[in-house]
Amino acid sequence: MSEIQHCDILVLGSGESGKYLAWTMAKTGLRSVVIERALIGGSCPNVACLPSKNVIYSAHVAALLRRAAEFGISCGAIGIDMGAVRDRKRRMVDDLIEIHRRNYAASGAELVMGEGRFVAPKTIEVQLEDGTTTMFTGDRVYLNVGTLATIPDTPGLRQSRPLTHVEALELDRVPEHLVVLGGGYVGLEFAQPMRRFGSRVTVLEQGPQLAAREDSDVAEALMRRFSEEGIEIVLNAELIDVEGRSGDKVRLRIRTASGTQLVEGSDILVAAGRMANTQGIGLEAAGVALNERGYVKVNERLETSAEGIWAMGDCAGSPQFTHAAFDDFRIVRDNLNGGQRTTRDRMMPYCMFTDPELGRVGLNESEARRAGVPYRIAKVAMAAVLRTRTISETYGHLKALIATDSDRILGFTALGAGAGELIAVVQTAMLAGLPYTALRDSVLAHPTIAEGLTVLFANEPALPATAG
Image (cartoon, rainbow, N blue to C red):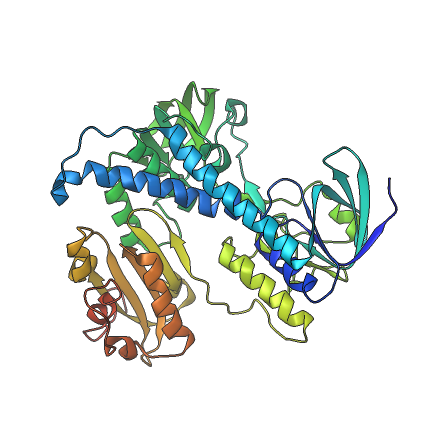
């Protein structure tokens, strides 16, 4: 084993937070080393955000082609080549990895490929890809190890070798009948494309609605849309056990309000939550404490229980979005330069890339009620936004929560075409402290989706019907 190498900045994991911190600090002349086990750039460009949206868009094209006659277009039978879908995704991933390699080279940050494990405070031993080991110590050490899909301990489930999002993105075939465990954003973002590719799809959700964090009107609209596309949804479904092998034939025994029943399929996709990737990396030797859920325990400045060690991104319990991880980087970077930034009171936008898209920022009605925050409500159907009529995408609605004692915007939800882009407009207004009337009275281009904000706020927001 070579002698211990010293660096100024030592990062375990090359995800969003870690790579940007290394690139930035290396440009200031500090020796910055990133240790990465397998995925250059982390999950987002390899097996998560970007690859999944790539596949989702391929499915969107397939759905549009099936609607061709609606737009006055004639075309023949639609064929799906999942191998080509996968290859398109792989080309994008390869391009993104190459961009990351160039960024490392340009910044001067060092990327070390291997398995890293703490053996002492601020000291990481790395099992390199060639089988040799080396050791690094850092003046400042950063954990950026992310999360991985959780597979519940249901009898027979793990033995069935189910798909997670990682394996699903590598499919070169259309599953005959895909059973999706979980009706959250991962499950829904995979269920709909697979149905559009030609799979029979069944979603098993253990809770009383899809998209558990959303308001009931959103959940009901998503359920209607999925049902219209031929996706079977079973709510309040408790998985008892599993038989068979995913990719061949599986039998899932579930318990619902109507009793026990069998669901048979060809493949299982587990989308039942995530767990921190903190096991087996020697955090106890580093003096880094975990919380009861296995995530790294951090304060508002992302400092861990060990002096000189920070945690960023998913493993620190931050919202599991790439944009949250990027802001974690900015907090750490600014504080290294004398800033006083924290994670407290961040306004975190959320987008689910179903069709239609779901975008949200700030409070929704469910959260406002739980927090005891009084509100007024403005709501309008997407069909009232004239741009949606030009593209035949009128499904969904816009909804905003307005404070009762002022015209301050408390939150905004968009379910419809372009929702992911629309939320940025309202978020900007909220960050600037603008009243909803500023958007109502703005001159917005016609016909655009954003113009729907003037429609949404055209009438005085009203108290919700359930208000006491």
